[in-house]
Image (cartoon, rainbow, N blue to C red):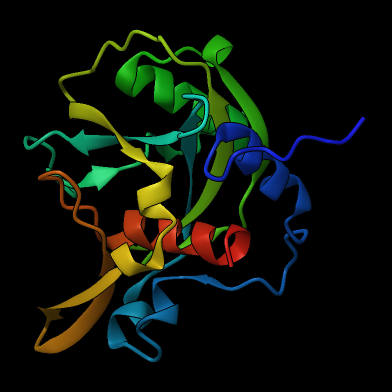
Amino acid sequence: MDQVTPAPFSAEDFRARVAAQPLAHAADDYGDHRFNPGHPRLKLAKALRDAAVLIPVVDHGRDATLLLTKRAEKLRNHSGQVAFPGGTIDPTDPSPEAAALRETFEEIGLGQDRVEIIGRMPDYVSGSGYRIAPVLGIVRPDFSLTLNSEEVDAAFEVPLRFLMDPANHGRDSRMWNDLEWVFYEMPYDGQHIWGVTAGIIRTLYERLYT
């Protein structure tokens, strides 16, 4: 019997691409510095802080989506920005995967029973001094979310087909201490996806869809 090829941009296609991706190793070098080589901001970061985010691919049949959050406007850091659910890895977290699942539940109420972890991307180093472990997961649909209003103002889904199309990967910049800081941006349906989140999405595209 012939093997059925998963539909492009389905969760099953995503799963197959993750299984076939090159193994992460110490030589992998992903992060904001790739877009800003030699920028003085990168030299100001002290010891990197470890964090983990969940990249939640929601299984909607032929057209999967990515579940993203909009951080609360009341937060001191990165307020109002679009982000993956996640945060700092605590000493009590046994692994980055456990940290990503814990933070996801704390932020938006998505239980780990709804998420199947299928792998990880290489760490992504942010200009703000974090070493981020992007944890890849497939989410069963028809879930119910409970947003933590102290951390998250909204949660929304973006088609994987849109995010994995390089035509939607724009580049912009802002001034930092009179120097240009370059980043990716992917505006969608009134949401401004940019910075580290867009950088991780770009990395996902480069490793899985090129």
